[in-house]
Image (cartoon, rainbow, N blue to C red):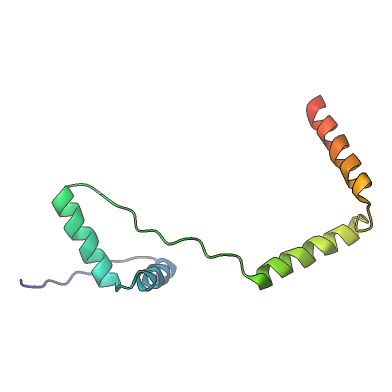
Amino acid sequence: MAQATFSVRMDENLKKQFDSLCSDFGMSMSTAINVFARTVVRERRIPFEIASPEPEITREKAMQAFMELREQAKKNKVQDMTLEEINEEIRLARLEEDDE
């Protein structure tokens, strides 16, 4: 079968993301476009979704988020609250929500 070439314009960042995902799927961007085109022609619709799971949060990112929350607790002077005090704050916040 004779081959034809065509160009597609897209945002540079989108191209990088698409290339990376195609690589995750074990194919090139060209192969992915060909799979898409053949399936659309055969089924006469946009027939499928190719998905990659969201990357899991890394330990480093989780630790960074924890440290940021800890810093906020220090700023708000709540880092030394007891469980009873925390529960009372929650109870009061819920009462305020019910009043609104």
